Amino acid sequence: MNNKGRHINMVDITHKSTTLRKAIATAVVKTSMRETMEAIDQRRVPKGDIFEFARASALFAIKKTSDVIPDCHPLPVEFASISYSIDDLSVKITVEVHTVYKTGVEVEAMHGASVAALVMYDMLKPIDKHVEIQNIRLQEKTGGKSDQKIAAKLGLRAAVVVCSDRVSSGKRQDSAGLAIVDTLEKYGFANVAYSIIADDFDLIQTQVKNYSTSGIDLLIFTGGTGLSARDVTPEAVSPLIDQPVPGIMEAARSYGQQRSKYAMLSRGVAGFVKNTLVITLPGSTNGAKETMAALFPQLLHIFEVHNNIDHPLELK
Image (cartoon, rainbow, N blue to C red; front, side, top):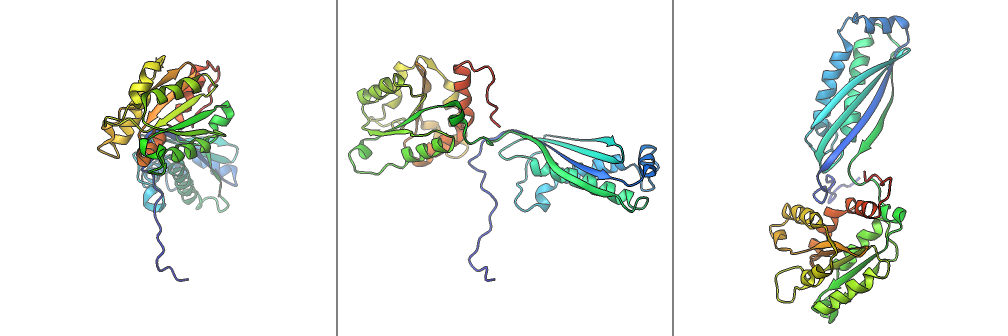
């Protein structure tokens, strides 16, 4: 096969947010004789204590996962635990790993469980020729963005309004607003309302008032959050907000600042107007995409809290 011109890259995680991520993996080492289990329990295995050797090897494996699995990113291991349980002729290995990072630790946990099982196999095979490794599997994981249809489950409705003199006059095509609509659809929003208006104070306020009385749960403006004379979106939206949620834009600017030195210049605001959450995003396509990546899907939890849902949907 001719591989000329082919490129093999690691998965790009630069757009992801750093969050607490956990994973638990298990593996089973099955012996064939009661005598083997007695040797394990009485620490009489000739090669040594299989629990301590396996534990040390699992810790090494967890930390070295990216060295042997090509597409795994190096990441900080904040916590690791290796535990064992005995069931008849089997030893069950449980490995738990935590990190605060942009990607999960499922493979790290499974790698640790696998190596621990291999160490046990190697130490037991001189006394048990039929020892087996079974059922290496991911038991549990939390963190990240595993639920892609949260808005559909909550029945949420959204609208996107592009604020731009040039786009509204036909001098430029919109891409930021369409990128926002695309992201919303990925999270389960159906039939997202989409419109384009000029950078006009009164027009912006009219949009907010209309949508906040028409059952829209989430209203996103893109454009008009900069420092030019025509950037009036924050000024138009702010007086209408009943309940500010400053942490939303704080999170967006913090995320953006790690990727662009100009993120600090955005003056976006966010808060509820009646029961509609209004957010103002930058007008650039990259700025809009980055802000959406910074806020979703965790932003959707706000509707559970605001609507007093007793059992919030877990955003994994």
